[in-house]
Length: 397
Image (tube, rainbow, N blue to C red; front, side, top):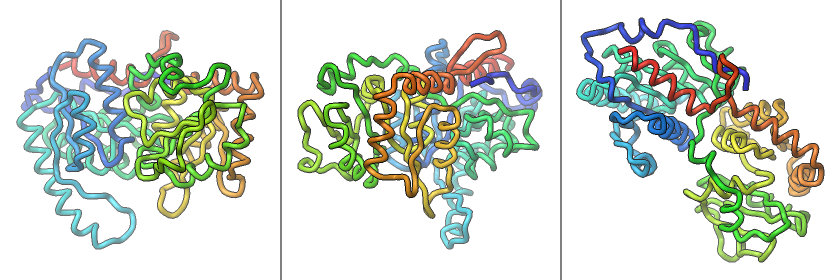
């Protein structure tokens, strides 16, 4: 990705706006939640900060969902929950009720930020991030926000106005922020630095993959996808002898009988946790949805993708846009609508496995998509770039 230029804004002005706050340069707050896609990229930035020598206090402001606390605290990060309400674009009685939750979240976040006095707040988006960002602005605490998807969610749109910096993953996303164009930095989506240290050899050993067969990983997400699980079943006979298929079914959809292992051909697990990095690194091709996490983690490892975007009335179309942009970058092939079948999935996979030039082109395109060019021509990752920016900002205090 050709970007990485610092946005031409006066960060000094943002940082010096309210000297009465007495910022603590050794404390950085993070916020975001609602889904894992709003948490894992933030944790990637935290990991990068620590790798770069930041030893100060880092804490997270999230929702009251137990899973969010579990994910964050597992990374040795302090977690504080606040009341939160969803931001719906359509009319609903729940909107009225959630207004009170949002207001309560604002006052809870403001009290926490006033007490902890962080130098900076990093927002990863999601509905829980809006009250902390508004509270930070009221206290004179500068904050930055990051958007993973091609089109920004409502929370990012609301947070953008008073942000000191707006990080976006895709160049196309900048068009949604006409009045804040000077604050935009295009930097991809952060992935954990530890993911980049994953080992294909460890992955193959962990999976028990046979020698001589490429690995194809189907990722149904942590909750799973009935559609993708059905497509695996349909495609599996066409991949026999040509690939070892690894299948994350999702905990809600795992059936020990239906997903029993087939030696040398197929292995299913409800969910891969810490080992997912090594599993992905071992993949010749990855198949799954086109959420930001899937796209950017595969891209960072140079894995060609077959993407099946989630579509329909229950989505806002972000996965379709992500998939289209990945395909335009030549890092992925996209299947949807009438073109979607087990046979089509198998054909797309074999199109990579049986054509070395096609695989190599997609491999190079994926790596190019995930990297960022600095002004001096060197390359870095999204997590490192954002971490460097945050450290630069707090060094001005």
